[in-house]
Image (tube, rainbow, N blue to C red; front, side):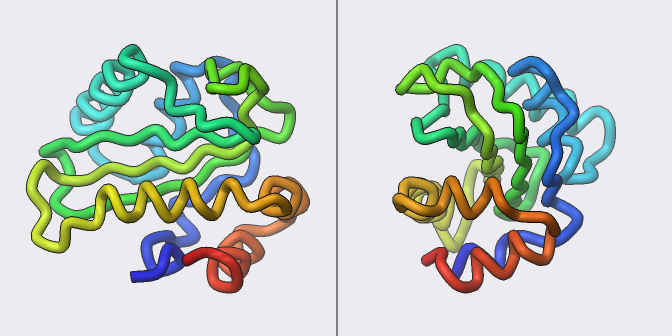
Length: 150
């Protein structure tokens, strides 16, 4: 399965409003349009995961991810923060691109780790951070995934 197939226009936000790491996690979870209780559970699970070690992989990208019972299938969201945000990334640089991955505890298709790898591979391509920063529409993001992402 290609990454493009896992994103919808509703789960992409090209200008995140959050100013802190915690608020960014909440805003990303909000893109999934779950009920309030589920959003709270997901936020706490992601926060616990971040406390183990930042999901900021460098080159301006973070991939917050977890498994949770609040979803019954793999769910992804993307958010961009043009001004950047301190996310304790591995290279200590501000993060501009956030790819959220949520998977159920058991998934028949077992896509969670392969999708995590595909996003990391895509985000670390030399020109992808620049291309993401130049996007001016959600459709542009989806087209970029279609053209360039595995």
